[in-house]
Image 1: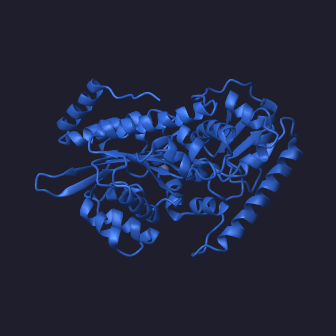
Image 2: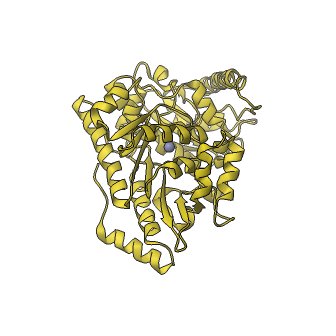
Length: 419
Ligand SMILES: [Zn+2]
């Protein structure tokens, strides 16, 4: 992976920040956030987050942290609201915060009360003692992070440069665990998050960003060393099965469906998707889960799989089977939740057509496109993970906790401009 850093562009962002009365540090933060966001092999659609810590003229420390609802590739200053750092650091040695308490703390620490909610990873960013912190879900990293136990391999690849954080659900618990791991590995330059992604940090914008690029490149090299091919993003080039699309649309818009008011289908058929969809064990692989935890809120834990010549009755039967499976998943896992959960609709968001391609389903074209983009990346990561070893993402219980996490559900309920 190549660095997109360019001195002239960086200087332009600094100038723009100055003209708006903002700090140089924020200007550079916007710049490197955008070049991270501009690479679909680093982050997609609201994935990843970035921050920068600054000191005001009267000596108070603030942190600009990505606000919920913003995408890194188009982020602007209002998408990086400032929080009072001392208020967040106080949570480090305090009691465990529940989700509502953490959100309340993050909102109370905001300088501007009408700012968007700081990222649910704000505490993790706050605890790391570096000006710049960058977090991505890079494809090459996911191909390796979704393997059975990578602690020794990560050590072999990165030595002491990365510290290994076992999977913990994002939010308060992850911030405490990541801090603990960092304190045990003070010289590290980044954190490897099992089943999730990568954090890098440094006191200047370029170093933190270029560490991200360097570590992703090292993951690409590890895949290449093992003879695993990881292709870049691919445009859809397979013919669309229009007959199937029509039948699927009809089945999805029946009364009682969440798409009764209209459905958008985003069809993708790339070489990587066809490879995935043609595997004899595609169903077993698909059932394992999503490549990074927060994909589950967009595409559900698994796709529905149908044959290319499925007729209406077969599609309806597949939908019914999917609904039964989803209800059983909900019931198994809701039973152990600490508060009551309400089941979401039981329709798939991704329909995999065996051997051919993928339909991402949404109530709007935008939602369907987001699903399609996530699948495009995910299938490349899964193919590479399977070629390297065994694709092993978080298990069902962790998927459920993520899918039914109130803070994630809040993202979907956000106003349209923040979707
Ligand atoms: Zn993440």
